[in-house]
Image 1: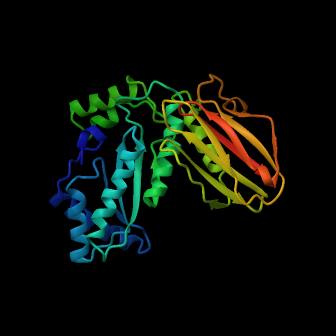
Image 2: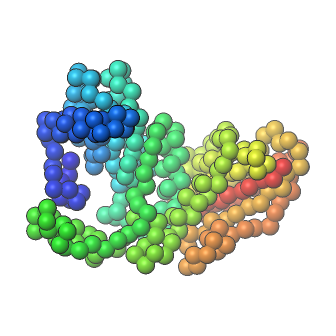
Length: 301
C-alpha cells in the first residue's frame, strides 16, 4: 500500500488488491490445498485495503487464514494499538477466523534512538505488548542488513524509486538487523537470546509499574525458573521482586544485560553476577534497573 517507498512496484487500491488476492489465493490453493493464505501485509494497518479484504472473504467465502500488517514505531503501546484495531475489524466479521500476524516491526527507522540500551528493551516491551494484545505471530525486521545494487531495482522500479532504495540501504545508517553489514552482532540479538531462555510453562508475573514488565517461566525438565524483567523508561527505578509459593531453598543466578559495552562476546553483554541463595520465607530480590535496563535470573530448585 506504499508502492516504491516499500520496495514494491505496485501501489494497490482496495478494488485492485481484492481482485489480485482472489486470483492469487485460487492459484496457491490449487498448487497446495493445505497452504495458509492471507494478507495484505499493509504498511499502514488503517489502510482501506484491509476492510475491503475482510468484506470480500466473508461475502464470497474466499479463504483467509491470516491477516498481516507492518509498523515501525518506537512506541510499543502504539504497536499494540494496531493489534487492537485489527481485532476490532475482525469482530465485525465473526464468520472469519484468521490468525493475526504483524509481519514487519521495529523502531522508527527514520528517527532511530541514540541510546544503545533503547532498542533491546524496546524489543522486550513490544513483545510483552503483543502477548497482552493477543497477537498470534510476529516477524522482527530483520536478521541482517545488506547493501543493494541499482540494477535489480531498475528492472521494475522508476528511476526515483531505484535511487531511493539505493540511498536508503547504502547511505543511511541502519539499525534494523540483528547483524550489521559486517556480520557483527548487535545488542538486540542478546535481547532475543534472553527471551529464548524463557523455556517451559509461562508463569504469572505482575507489576504495579507502567514501565517495568517481565516474563517468567518454569522449566520442569531443566528444574529451573526463568525470570526476565526490564525498565522501558528513561529514568532508573528500584524493583522489588517477590517470588510467591517458593518450593524451598533456591539458588538465583543473576545476569545483567549490558547493551552499552563495546564488546560483543556473550559474557560481556550478558554479565553473570554472584549467585544468591533464597530461603522459602524470604524469597525476594531487590535490584536497581537503569533506564532501559534489563535483567535475567535463572533460579535453580
